[in-house]
Image 1: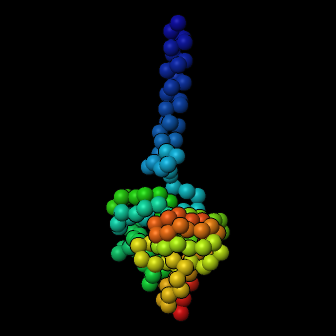
Image 2 (image 1 turned 45 degrees about the vertical axis):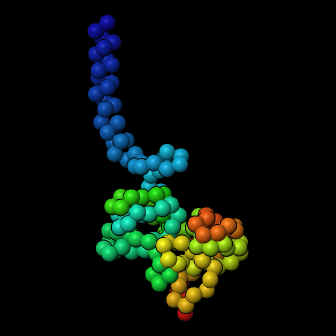
Image 3 (image 1 turned 120 degrees about the horizontal axis):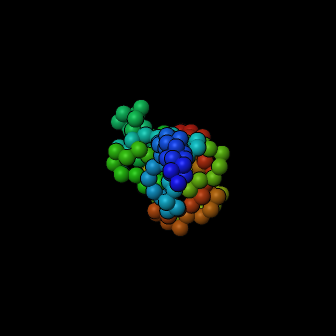
Amino acid sequence: MKTKHGLAILLALIIAPFAGIAQAFAPKGTDALNTQGFLDGAFTRSAEVALSAHLLVTFGTNAATQVKLNTAATRPLGTVYDDFAINALASIIPLPTGMPKIFIASKPIAAGVRCYGTAGGQVTDAVVSGAYLVCESLTDAAGAGSEFQGLPLSPVINP
């Protein structure tokens, strides 16, 4: 009987350090699937402002550590993976990744048009001088604040 308990204790002592390593690498936060973590290919920065999922972000006040909502006149870095509170560590999916991603429209947008960054991290199909091209829409966007799927393009300023 003592041998069984002794083996169990020995096994627990061998496995315990690995549990700590697994916890250190476990994803942080929660999304709709309760599994949100930091994605492959994404990078992290502190949210200078509250951020909502799929909005465009740009460099924050401290470019090395922060991001904030993109505007029409700023070069977007990528889209936010999930909702993040101020000062939270946010996952940013860089533009372009080559795979379709979700964007947030500032107005109704038809599929198959080029879209540009605009105020509040949203995108528009309106061609505005000085705005950055960010994607080509793959699906329709119903209106302001609605999600649509777009193919990311390398951000280029519209002259």
